[in-house]
Image 1 (spheres, rainbow, N blue to C red):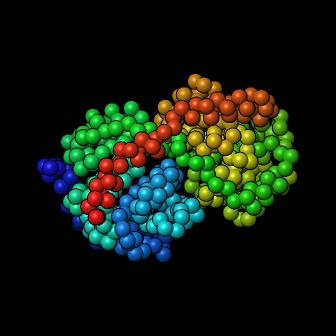
Image 2: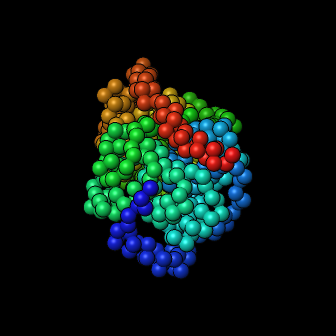
Image 3: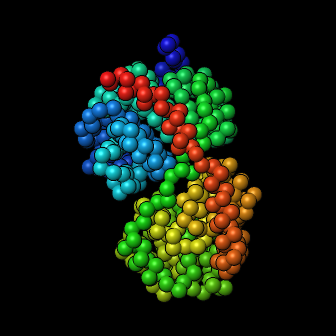
Amino acid sequence: MAKPRSTALIRLYRAGTWLVTPFVRLLLAKRLKRGKEDPVRLRERYGYASAPRPRGPLVWLHGASVGEMLAVLPLMDRLRARGFKVLLTSGTLTSAKLAASRLPPDIVHQFVPLDSPLFVRRFLKHWRPDLVLLVESELWPNLLIEVNARRTPLVLVNARMSPKSFGNWSRLSGSVAALLARVDLSLAQAPDDGERLGKLGAPRVVVTGNLKFDAPPPPVDIVAFDALRHASANRVVMVAASTHPGEEEIIIEAHKRLAKELPTLLTIIAPRHPERGLDVVRLATDAGCPAVLRSDGYLPDRGTQIYVADTIGELGIFYRLATVALLGGSLVRHGGQNPIEPIKLDTAILHGPHITNFSDIYTKLDANNGAAPVTDARSLAASAFMLLADGASRQRMIEAGQQTIGTFGGALDRTLAAIDPYLVQIRLERH
């Protein structure tokens, strides 16, 4: 096979990352101060392993954060069932904490090394993966080049390419095509994603669907769930999940409007970044809505109007408790959050207008009345009131949502079928 070509821009990037490598400690020190790195595991960001390599064939999966990790949990289970060891990497503290609580003990989690040739080589020398699966859109140049240099098969799974990313990458079309030439296979979430990847130069693209539709609902700590359910007994509960700055003010205003009609209303706000919890409490308090912080150990009492859930891995509890959920990242220009989990947990879905990250799903949900769009505090309050006050309407939306997402399933089997030749080849080479 011909060696993938390079470009002046790629060579400049490579040289630049070599040059800044000695100064990376300054970047990581800054991130440490901001609470974005784990001081105990900081060496992993330099490519140093904090665990031994498991014996036998090893598949390395990398996903940037929580969403990507959750999407590939069933895939990891299938790989383990076939006798493959699994190394999972991610880049955020939130995902690392979730890994600690959700992964079985035989799956190794590491922080992905920063994209320096030195760090990536060090990482690969220790782990020696037999197959690399990059989740969604994790296309780091040095990582791709160094994996390719070792002749290790590399596959994009659950790959997506948003219109915005496509526009940005198209401006660097030659270099992007040279990088994508190093990807053996791209398994796209949707036809539009596959078409954009193909236009950018990905040599082999197959549409396999979105793995998130095949992921199970998040587990629940029964003790924690029962405690919160008891504390909120006889109350109407709404959750605003994975919210971003600029959304909480809208949600709090909607809560105030709703509370005039539903005085027992409890609104749970779960910020996408838990470290923002105290800021949300201040916003609620300043608006005249008594609020408490879950991370402080509080449960809502009769006087609590806003319950700020600044914890990790507990959305399953809040979705099971609430009957209506607003999916965050959609009232501001973030692109929306995944609606699959709450729908699977019998929650009616509302969302804002900014849903480009999941446009295909939301378009079908809205068309089938399995979700409803809102734009501001007034429309959020009106739509939430209809669902909270009318159990029949709420149930129709839940059932329509579940029927809609059921039509998207099957991505896990298609993904496994697509990577099976690589798994077979690994087995043959090891015997």
